[in-house]
Length: 314
Image 1 (cartoon, one colour):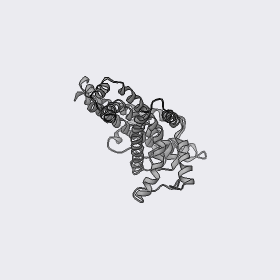
Image 2 (tube, helix red, strand yellow):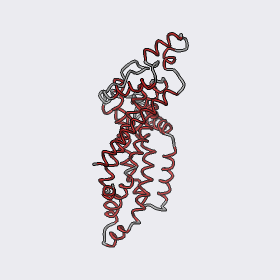
Image 3 (cartoon, one colour):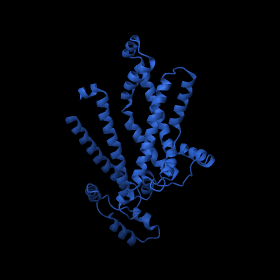
Image 4 (tube, one colour):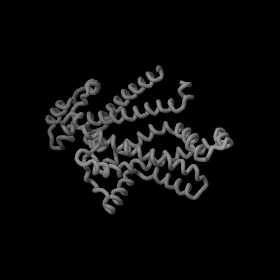
């Protein structure tokens, strides 16, 4: 229990530090939100009036404490760019990004683990060399290029979906998922390659363990050894990687939402950074940080459940 309390304390402290760093960095970057909103023709008096209206004339510490106090009560302030409450802006957008991330994570797990096991069992074979090359290619190619390639092949040539014509799940559930699967693939490809590589290495190491030789001497079949013993232990060793994969999925979705024209929080984040809409940026960064930290917390619990040795040590 003491361990979990300590982890929750670290999680809260991390969120606090992230909020301070994000707020501070955004305020020291050159640029004036009031000038961006009014344009170059605005007078100094107009700029000062707008800064006062937006609360930008107050000290940074006061602005920060006001934002934190409001956030604790569900009030994330008013968007400078849209002149709407930030909480209202996030309605619908957060769920879209979470669904996109969940689809990408499902693809990573469903494809990455079997592919890693397959390549581990094909050491020095031609198929292994081909898959290793594709792995390196998948990790190296930028997400925006994969997105453009998928749009060109499946949208413009095969006409499996209409690029730029996003539909909400409420309006057309089938059309929504048909559109979302392609950006999910673009996000999942590099993360799948990373998971495949780690699974392959973990399986090869487990196959060399003493318990595998013991199982063989007792007459266990190759498939039973692989899927009952080896794969279970290999997955335990790569569970911590899930946190990194989730971080990669969220960072990838920021660019890929823009390319596919998906109205999620990634697209909103880019627009907010460009217009120096710091209440919206601050809120979006905190939302993303909370999701990633919670996933890492769950992963930490899973590791202890799957590997009792860690639980005993702690």
